[in-house]
Image 1 (cartoon, rainbow, N blue to C red):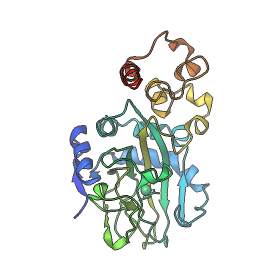
Image 2 (cartoon, rainbow, N blue to C red; image 1 turned 135 degrees about the vertical axis):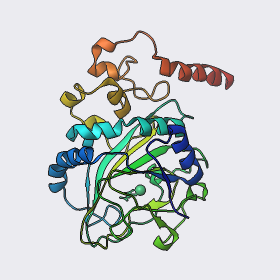
Image 3 (tube, rainbow, N blue to C red; image 1 turned 60 degrees about the horizontal axis):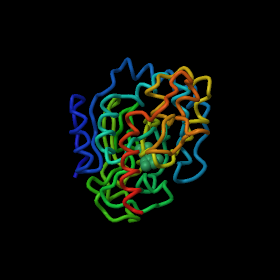
Image 4 (cartoon, protein in one colour; image 1 turned 30 degrees about the vertical axis):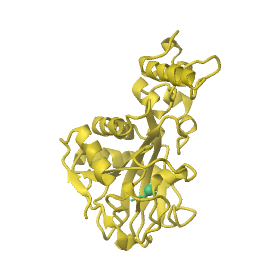
Length: 291
Ligand SMILES: O=C(O)CCC(=O)C(=O)O
Ligand SMILES: [Fe+2]
């Protein structure tokens, strides 16, 4: 079974449905050549000065370059891409909100062997989330073509419904082959891994992932994005990178202040934002019912 291909005009709900069905899908030709060139120009200096990975999982011939919200204005557009945010919101709608989890160029160099097949949600200390309770929405934007030969991500379609902590071989997977400018979208429960690069060119993807706001972020956005840069970012992006509360109370500052107020004091609110009213209502009814 191959990874399903969708067009860039697919609705966010249909993208989310494809992921619910198979754990992964490819949206073809989302970015234009001009957008890709601009992205590449912003990312190159940072990738050039990144060292190879320290272990097999990160990849000893693979570079992983993060901090992309701070380092690349064009990446902010990928982070905020409406189709991605719409699909993520649909897939993760069982929680109050979701947030940016990590931003990372993954440049798999020639000679890199295949990465171990895994679930991304194992990052949460291998917590056994209930089947169907998705905690992550992930993207890998293809900056080069992704081919079987150059290390296209390996996926087991449908494995989002499998048991946890299973071990697989590369032969159990299929390559998520896609053209430059396409994006692989997948959830935290699908088994996958970076492919072996048997070509003589580097395979480059931009991995941008989102998770439920009640979980910890893999990349520490508060430290990765300097305060002076954060101050210049749009409010929506600030909230997405974590300057908001998760559920009712998670992440407040001093006297129950919303974290966005630290950056923008003019946004001080006396009450809760609309997005938190539902969480408050649940806390009151479910909290009281338990007493
Ligand atoms: O680069 C890829 O194709 C996937 C990498 C991956 O799955 C990971 O590092 O978690
Ligand atoms: Fe992964």
